[in-house]
Every structure is written in structure tokens, then in C-alpha cells.
Image 1: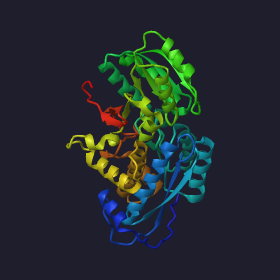
Image 2: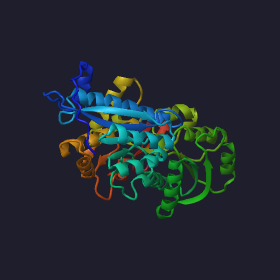
Image 3: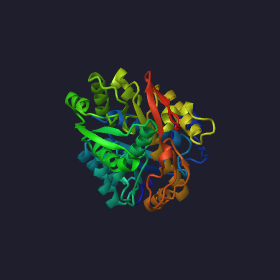
Image 4: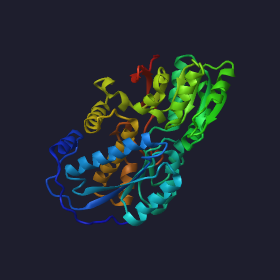
Length: 395
């Protein structure tokens, strides 16, 4: 696939944008940009996954602007072609077909949800275009697909992190409440598989639909189940907030765990006071200012958070961080590859070593297209409407 080499005039940018580029560690290039490299993005910026997709979209827009203000990548400016799939897998498939067939993009970033990502994968694989997903299910990268990478921690990692925290609290008998969406189903499967090895017993299960507004029957079933010590919710978007509110309304007081699929202040806003005490594994971006000064991610996290808050006036979301990581992985790979030739870009992505992102320190390989280990997730608890970073030694 050949990248378009259409020449463009240099854009006039504000001093504030240039400052943001410098803050992001991007070196300005004196020579004018030579070409317009097309980067595609298909995100769920409306629909049930809007609060995941909206910060992804704004992040890509802000940082592409900053990169271009600093001279682009290898002297080439980026043209972000962004589409909204509304959370619908078939729409996502059609949109990514348009990106690779008509726009001839050099890479695709996106797939806000597991379902939309899985619909896009056959298209990018057939077109041989590098694709960096922003969704969580491990099945996106296992088995490894040559052209597919992803930035978020996997659902399996989330289960393992939750189980480790449960064991520290001497809680071993749980219920799982999972969404019927692709991520909810995948995380439920991963948790059930990982439970025996972690010394956890799954004594009961309930499910809910992504659009359900009443889950009182499921909560009543939890109350009737003897011996439960904690409940784990597997899902993303608005559903987990509805479950959390219903959980408290039912008078349930057992420790409640969510996944990194709710790692946004919008979850806290939707769940309201019911979110108090909820624990979840998440990227350290949410608690950047509370990390130790020697933490190797702290500078990157703080730079992202300060720029995001200055530009948007909103609290950071882990989902915006996933998009930032996807874009910067592509940019750094293109620098190492000397350009945006898809095959060379793919090889450079797979050769990523020690890349410091918002989600962790990324080291990929031919057998690992996520490049994160369990240490990349931090355990958080929601207290008084904010995130609290828990100690790994027994908080």
C-alpha cells in the first residue's frame, strides 16, 4: 500500500500549541513539512461507549495538532481522518474499509470497544495496514495477528490484579456480574479461567445487557447467595455504573470491584455516592500526581495530564491515555522506520522496547503485541469522589 505524497502548505499555529508540543517532548523541525501522511481512526464517540470514545477523539486531535506544530514526523505532517462508529461493529467495519481502500491511510488507531475492534481486524489484516486497538479484551492480540497491536491492559491482567488484591484481603469466594457485550463476556471468561490458579472460587454469576436500566433482579440473586465475600463486575461504559447504583440500593455491602473499563471520572459521576469504596485496577494516569518521584512514568503522565486539563478543562481519563499511547507508538515507530511504509512501520511497532506510555512501559515482541506486564496496572479505590492509590502491600 502506497502512502499519499500530496504536498501541503505549512500551517500557522499558536504559541500555546507549540508550547504543548515542547511539553510533550517533541523536537521542532526547522524544515517545512514535505507531505501529508494519513492516519485513520475509528472511535465510538457517540452511543453507549461515548465516555470512552470522546476522550480518545480529543486526545488524538490535540496531539496530532501538537506534533504538526513541531514539524511533523520525519518532516511529514499528519492528517488525522477520524470517524465515529456509534459503537456499532458493522459501522466500524465499513468505516475502516473506507480508510484503507479510499483514504489509503498509513495506520489505523481505534476500536474503542472490543466488539468494534474485532469487526475491524479482518479488514486491516487483509489490507496489511498497522492497526493499534484501544480496546481491552485479550482476544484482540491472542492469538497474535501480524498487523494488530493494542495499548490497554488486557482483561486477563485485570482479573489477575483484582484477584491478587482479594487474596491480600483474605477474600476468596466471589460472584461475577458480567456484561453481555464483547468485553464483558471476554473478561468474565478470563476471570473464570484465572480463578482456580489464584485460589479464588467463583460461587455465583449474573449477567446484564449494555442497555439495561434495571438490574434489581440480579442484585436480589446476589443477596440470596450464601458465602459470598466480594463481587467483581466485568464491563465497560454506562452499564457498570447502573450495576453499582443498584448494588448499593439493594443493601449489598460486600467489597465491590470493577475493571479498568470504568477508569474515568465519568463513571464516578454516573454511579454517584454508590461508587464509594469501589476498587479497580487502572493505568497510573489517574493518579499521576501521587506517584513517587522516581517512578519512570511520572513525567510522561504529568505532561499528558497538564496538557489535557489545560486544553479541555476536564479530568483525565485512562481512555484518552490509551489513544495517546496508540498515537505515540505509531509516531516513534515511524521515526525508527524512517517513514510510514506500512510493512516497515509494522516491524518497528513490533520492535518497540521500553516505550514509556500512560499505560505502562511497553516492550513488544513477535509473541506479544501489547507489551505490558501486570506491574503496569495499579489498584485504586474510589473515596469521596476521587481516586486513591492503594499500596500493593495490603491496603
